[in-house]
Length: 416
Image (cartoon, rainbow, N blue to C red):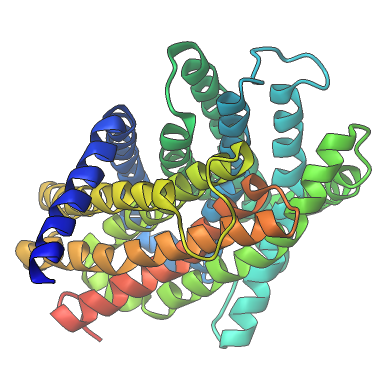
């Protein structure tokens, strides 16, 4: 019996190694995309680290930030997943004709950006009231949400389309490239644009006019999104409605957690730089896995069974391996940048180790949740591309922050 086991384990190991070798192109593409997106994510981290004064001056702003940033991942992660499926199925085309794949997804991006921004402002105000924390006015939150969200979305839409075209022309695996790049670039673009939008609320008269205009435009876009002429656009919006309404609640809770410990986080500024890329990459890893499973489900490579089949297990092992490398990189870069900027007040080794441990807690969670989301969406007749990436990125926004706060508190990096 023992000898049979000894034979079986090496065979399984060889089989797994063989699958990894077959997927080495995907591994290279995914690792490069994750490394680049990690560095891009630190733009958001350094921005958050540098606007501590604004966070104090505008209470409630930090509650809005994770939801507004996460919504870019919700909208454009789903778009990237849909384009990845089209690419894998051989139906992708480089054309902006009306009714084409790119034109439809661009229309969805515009409509959902405006409509979701209105909802996020309202949620942030409600969360501040529910937690007993002070907050700027609802109109100011809506202005920041709409203006910052629209500016960020314009940039990310251009990047998403460019990535899809490059992937199509060069034969890249869009499922492995798009999600990490889109989520990190969403962080990179949205946090600075949200900060820029805060200048509109610093003068009372400008703030009143801006909030009225933003509220009106967002309301019109919300109505228009459910009355779109294109049947496919209307279906995508309807399928994403529940996701857009519910997933920001997780991001709002994440923001409230950070708002409640803002004093401690300002005392360990390396964590302010580290949190955005950490939660972004945790969501990106889940997005890679769920996008690949969604494509395999729709192409019939795997079946929607409760227990994952071999191709799904291979994808999970790929994501786990990528996670170890990425979270080690995040901790190292966070320490290096904080040292260069004079914000390193914690033990560097503890920060790197804590980041890796938090990542090792978060990665299995993102794999399990991603798989179940993809399978259950498919079983209910929904398009997994419209459900899994948006949900997993929001789940990991909350779970990632919780993992970081827990591990850094236990290790002594965060005092409170």
